[in-house]
Amino acid sequence: MAAPGPGPSPAVKGGISAALLAILATVFAIEGGYVDHPNDPGGATNHGVTEQVARRHGYAGDMRVLPKHCAGADDICADRILVRDYVEKPGLAPLVEIEPAVAEEVIDSAVNFGPARPSRWLQLSLNELGGADLSVDGKVGPRTIERYRHYALTAGAGGCVAMLDALDARQAAEYARLVRVNPRLKVFYRGWMRWRVGNVDRARCFDRRWWEPAASTKGT
Image (cartoon, rainbow, N blue to C red):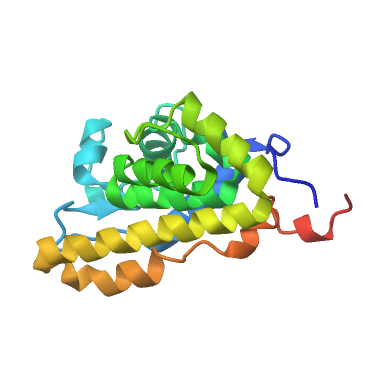
């Protein structure tokens, strides 16, 4: 089996690639709609976007009706905010093309934690699994992407699985730490472990066009 490399450029909808649309769909499914739990330091949230983040993007409406998708180029909506704040700004967009399954894990974690911690976990895991010798600064730049590209080419699908396992382990450890530091968060712990750890199907490492329903039936 050939080692994974960047696949064909996926089709785009509204400037968002098909792979990224599929990743966002999984994030939306986990996040659900509007919530405002008194124990959640993020406050009112809809489609994974906190009120603070929405206001920073210029949204002035009721958080209960924050649109999930944009109807026009100048609209403010959840998927546009998520792409800007948790994919483009943290430098994760190239990872979607290189290794969509790992990109899904890091982006989902970024929505949950903010991008800095998952970005550090990616760099730490690359250092441990791929000898990348990266500075662990939580900033995914060209060097981190180049090191991941090399890792993907040399480690193959098995390396993708190992990376997901490493990222999940770090995420689980952080959830445990958060609950120790702030017991009010314990109410979220079971849901975090159920829906956000191990949530990326490892089979996606072996089918890098998993977002296409008919991908497994196409000829090569």
